[in-house]
Amino acid sequence: MSPEPTGKTALEGPVRVRFAPSPTGFLHVGGARTAIYNDLLRQSLGGTFVLRIEDTDRERSNQAMIEQICQGLEWIGVEWDEGPLLQSDGVERHREAARRLVEAGQAYYCFRTPEELDEARQAAEKRGVIFRYREVFEPPSPAEAERRRAAGEPCAVRFRMPEEDIRIVDLVRGEVAFPAESLDDFIILRSDGSPTYHLSVVCDDIEMAATHVVRGEDHLSNTPKHVGLFRALGAPVPTFGHLPLILGSDRKRLSKRTGATSVEEFRDQGLLPQALYNALALLGWSPGDDLEVMPREEMIARFTVERLNAAAAVFDRDKLAWINGQYMSGLPLEELLPHLEPFLEEVGLGGLEGASRERLAVVADLLRTRAHTLRELAAFAVAYFKERVAYDPEECAKFLGQDDLPAQLERLAARFGALEAFEVEGLERELRALAEEVGVKAGVLIHPTRMALTGSKAGPSLFDVVAVMGREATLRHLTNFAAFLRSAGT
Image (tube, rainbow, N blue to C red; front, side, top):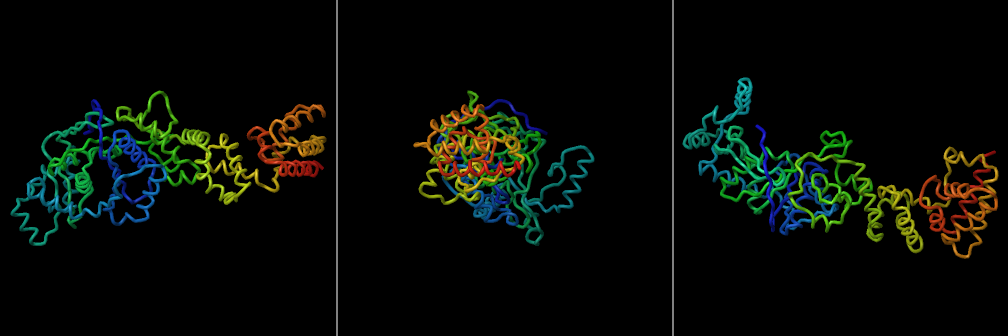
């Protein structure tokens, strides 16, 4: 039976929140968003953020994944105060909790085989009823359980769910009720002595004194089990918040194609961590005033759980690219350049020093409003450092029929070369004066000049491009392009 929500509640701090990923895969969009909301909640109300690694699945967990998760969180700017704590370090504590529950009569030993349980479930399904363990199997008495255990018979430990509705006030969904008839006893300790997820997570939340548990809605069905365990173990029940699904642009669950990728892949595509943090924060939360791009400080100041939305959020790659472009345009240049460095290395512009480094900063500043990613910005910058520009005959086709153009470009090169100061105003004045002399519109010279310098039809203001390109490179490219037009036109 599905839980039914009603109203929400407001919060006061300080809080103790936790992010508890499993190291069986990379840090993906959904996990990163959960970490961001925990970060914003802690930052806005004050308190502590604990990073806990739920590594009890030994076959699938590995150290490389733990390191990747930590690096991914650090890259997007999520900081934790405690941890990373390993869930596997608490296994004995988890087993001790199961023993206490058995002694208190709140859990019992279960000797049923998987085959017996499957048969009982199938029989319940045929009758059209919900399978509930104690309605089919009588738990053994303590004496019988001890006798069978002493005989070496394998058994698990099953938690005895209370025969009552369980209600919570969810930060996202308001009041949620789980009817008693939909709840069943469940395994907390396997027959091999290993704790299940449900026991481990509750014991660890108690150990770290979590006040708020903010996680994905896929955990909502686990919540009544966890509430039952908190109460049975005599611990305060934390406040829960279950975040909505993230859908792709096709409004289906995220796939690799629609955005279900690791945060490192976004980094490698050329996104800024500030932009990804900002974009993911908007997937289920509204800051108000139609704001979409804002510094971290403003997100923290505006963050309230009342503005968290229970409806599924759509991950829009185009929107992410736009937000990234806004950050690339607005970040102080000294903050942008370190993020750009790996992409400069890829295109052969790494390690520039002295005047070349200073020129790179000017080029990046000129081009960054036209790029959506750091990778794109680095690719744009290459043309400003080439000895020779490669010209595509198809791209240059419109210039090939202009017989006077090569000579006009050479005259333009001469006029540029004679300028005392190689600056925007003088460069524009000389080009427009030449256009007037030869009886053409300025655009007739502007477009081929851009092609000559960058090998592209589009870009920033031409005169900014020429000034940044510099005298020597500009004259060389104009002369080479004139030669190309003559040879290609013959």
